[in-house]
Image 1 (cartoon, chains in turn red, purple):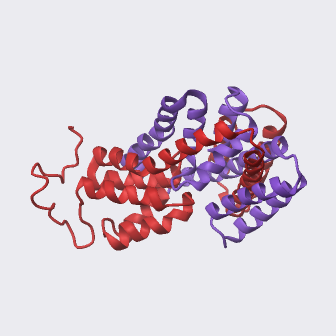
Image 2 (cartoon, rainbow over the protein chains, first blue to last red; image 1 turned 45 degrees about the horizontal axis):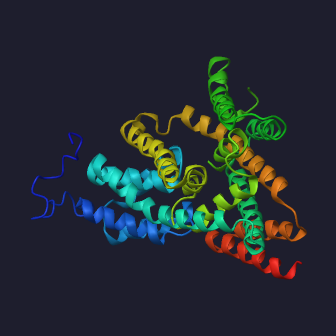
Image 3 (cartoon, helix red, strand yellow; image 1 turned 120 degrees about the vertical axis):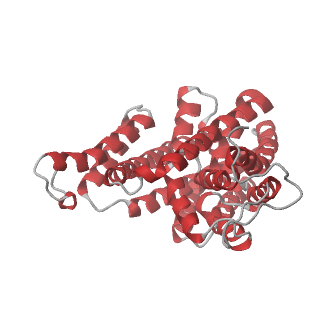
Amino acid sequence: MGMEHPRKDKGQGQMEIPLLSCTESAPALWQIVRTWLKIGTIGFGGGYAVLDLIHSELVIKHKWISEQRYENMTALSEMGPGAFTVNLLAAIAYRLGGVTAMIAATIALILPSFLIIVALAGVFLVWEKNLVVESAVKGLTAGVVGLLIAVVWDMVKRIPGHWCCFSVGIAALLLGLFFPVNPIWLVLMGALAGAARVLVPERYGKKSVQGGRNL
Amino acid sequence: MIPLMQNAAVYQNGWLTSSQFGAAIALGQITPGPVAISATFIGYKVAGIGGALVATAAIFAPSLLCMYLLEKFYLKVRGKELTNAIMHGVLPVVAAIILTAAISLGKESMHSVWQIAVIAGVAGLAISRKVSYGVLVAGAMTVGVFMAFVGR
């Protein structure tokens, strides 16, 4: 309660909240929930595929946030854990209406998928041994493996061309394949290696980081 | 995200078989929301509707909390050289972990030759970015159904 967004007045229904600038205006809670529900219902594909939809809904159609702020928030959401889309939309909802809006909007976003997946899970678990379902799952699994490979390919292209980044990746791959290591440790290892690449040369010799012969 | 779920659900706790996990991920892909919704499926498998609710809340709560904190403190860490370097170190590791997950999922659930063709086809189309993920997953499933009638 105490964390409500300051922009929100007590008399909610009567007048819309005054516009703060011509590009950004604070919407009412129900407007936020309705829009997030819409994104959750038609946002097929998830992740980056939905970015376009989010952009056209929030920046172009409703003009709730400016282009500049939208881009900042996109970068911010990539740093957060979990689903990128959820992070982005949670951050925007927080900006628009505080903690209440953030929670309500996230529930609205997830609800459609939640209902669909519970229904599908029920069907799938009952019919699992059916020959057609079994074969469909085989196809699905193969498709998922293919998608994961595509995701890896995209990431590999984004890795900075530096031998230390590649060796960290290869080390993580070998460790992951041949030892039952919890992935969290591998991520920490990568973070340490990345930090060391900057900190070590800083302390010894002050060479340029881009030079890359350090570490 | 997917490798972490695979590790927790399949290897550590044995809640699902590998192929059930594959189905969970696939369902997460074809539903409109984010892929993390696969956790709902896993929760449902383990403990019914209650499990689904708990799993969904648990998978998204950290997102909300961290975005809240990031929003507050982002300006302080943003653009710092160290932050970037850490992200550069984490990126290849994450790529490797996802590849590991793909390999173990593939190894344990590939029983037919046509599945390899599906893997190659989906990977190629996804990389080319001409077809959306949902369509690819639906297509892979259709091939599976088709093969059930043709294959035997």
